Amino acid sequence: MKSRSILVTVFIATFLILFGCNQKSELLTNQYDEKEMNQAIETAQLTFDKFLERFRNPQPGDEDFNVKVKIEDKNGVEHFWLSDLRLGSEPYIGIIGNDPGIVRNVKFGQQYSFQRADIRDWMFMSNGKMQGNYTLRVILKSMPEEESEEIKKNIGW
Image 1 (cartoon, rainbow, N blue to C red):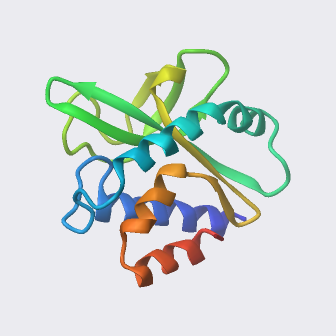
Image 2: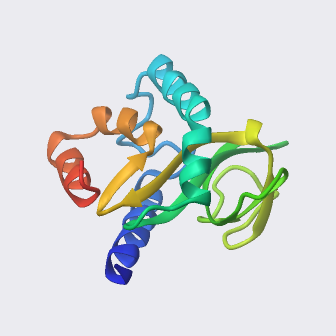
């Protein structure tokens, strides 16, 4: 299981490097459907209780629980995946999973406190299959098919 956890971590890091959190790469600039992305965020928010229950009571094979949060400062808005979560009660706490490209009020590896209202997505692995990650589902539609299929294969979709 540990090797799978490393694989997922490498996948997430690679995805963030290639496509950024809110810095749209040349490949993705304005290619995903904004309305569909907003619906994905709404779905993630509406199903967060499901994630929270699973986080607090993981099943055999569950690992790598992460949430994506919206962070804003005077420079703009950016979305970050957080790991090493503490979800007892609000404010929740997690660790910033990548370097910022827009905001300057956080940095990679920093502990960050957030509210439920800040959550834009969630994900975890269950027996080799990624659960949640609704925003990725939207982004995959805008990617070249070969790249999209490779990502899906790596996350069990």
